[in-house]
Length: 244
Image (cartoon, rainbow, N blue to C red; front, side):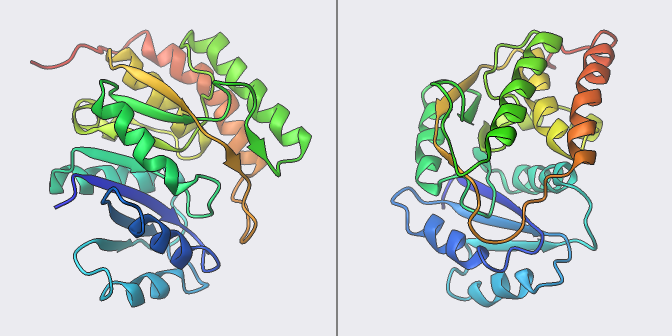
């Protein structure tokens, strides 16, 4: 029984989903995979279900109606993982921008003492492939902005490739995580640090998708920009002490 679950939210990922699933299951380190599909009209969920017999007991899918946002998909997945008692819970994109080969490195960081391991594009220079310069600069300076506002020392604040130890997701009140886009990624890191968990960055190379369509939008970016200030102000009135 693997102790590790990889959560992959999907919306219209038919070009990538079978390849990413097969890649994860080809790794030496065993993982379970949970796909959370938000009603993809392109048949993504049907592809996943067609693979379940082959990977019986290791590949799971939860289908939701309509696009409900990245953050709500992960919260759904976190609660599912906690009910199943996994020790290490991962966030990963379906489009190969996150290299599945790095899953073992993130897990190893948590096995060796980290509570949250972040696959970081910026902890050792700028390691991004196939992004236009404008997007690289937007992402890099967004992390600088987050550090300035929140005072957390994370180089890649918007990173979405992560491993959590179970204790982190048991401690954070997931029903109080409010943001649904890239601000969700910032909020989870910020909250974990406020609760006193050890967050480390593991250098990765991020490669932009070659198939399918990016879900990034100006609305998501605006939520992140304004949400950081709101999150910081709200933190002044929250209790981050852990229950014994």
